[in-house]
Image (cartoon, rainbow, N blue to C red; front, side):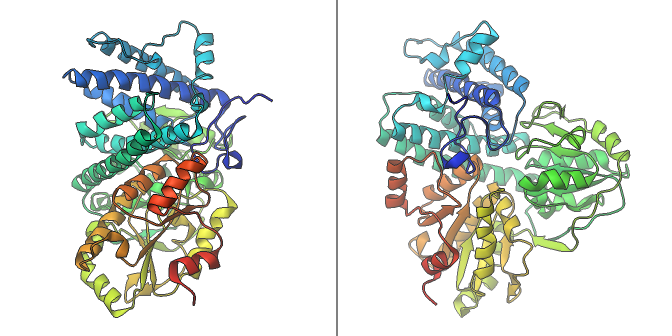
Length: 547
């Protein structure tokens, strides 16, 4: 049977080879192909913006935002709405054509920079012909896709910073230049390897930008207890990563009798001082993104998806799902609003008032808020614990969670860790072990949660500070090991950023990415010590030696 699509950008891709007849994520072939076409025309637009910059011409901020959002919309589990993708394709072509008129030299432009269509049939045929497999050489394909997926992650973090009024034109210029280079058939495998590493360097920059945006706007995260139970009021559940959306929702629900709960990657919002002034900011409900079908059902009230990760909703609660920003699903209500605009959440609030309170799933509390500012405030205590031998090692277990049973490895690994070991985490991977009774070491919790996946930057800063304190020449001399779970493209940019910072010997699971060709994987293994995972006992021996 002829494949109807091809996508291998996430960890759960079919057979760890590629989804060809429908995405494991729920993405339909038509949607996948439209995403491919959106990426194709966005590369063409980026080629033109890069040429214009070379001619000394400025690029409007709206165009930078358009490109960033286009990439964000194609991240795994962000948007499943075909109409939204068609609109973005048309908007991108319109913007491209306007800029094309300003370009002095058009002789070297690729087909992506000039392609047009007149009918829906032409669009459909083109969408099916511009996917991943158009690059025939598997090593070049691997390096191009590794770059692209890193850029998608970079775009996500860039968008979050932009929403808060923070931007860096150098980041936008690089992102677009790198996109354009994935069209350049003259680039060798060595050239593209350099591009991958440069993408990692800009990954560090974009996470630093977002860290500044978040902390300047909402304060530095601080040690916080988060309630896991429920109250008796009707409520709205907010998921995703966008703190500005949360802020607007909290402002608009104040004094309405409607509570707000976080879900999945929005949990770390509780760590920011600015949100603690809202008495109706009730707590966290549920777990990682992949459990949302049963958890959204039980919540009873409306749910706001601000970014990925959206699982195609069941009909039983689909009418309670609202999307905003880059997220979308056909049949779900979408809340409009561009950067700088105030979104209107009144429909959610009125909807919530008509719903019963959430059904309680669990009770108790979680402790988090161990981003770099907070951890560095505890630096003396941590250094003393290391010097005394109370803490022998830190294990970075950041990244993503997912529905595969193989991910239970991370729960079992956390349980099996030596008692003198502290877990450093960020991202939704924490849900595999953040509710385990792992205790503390001299008052230091054995799970230090820095926040969302982008807050992996905090973990890097903590490592760099410890390197300085201990007077080590190399970050890899620290008593830190890396056992990271990945799922989608934001995890890819985090990985590339860590490599750019010089971190080596990272273990990545539950599988190595399908988009790594054998030769590209070999380069990562030989140059950076990248490795997969195996079984608990074998990996513990690798990290800690024999008992």
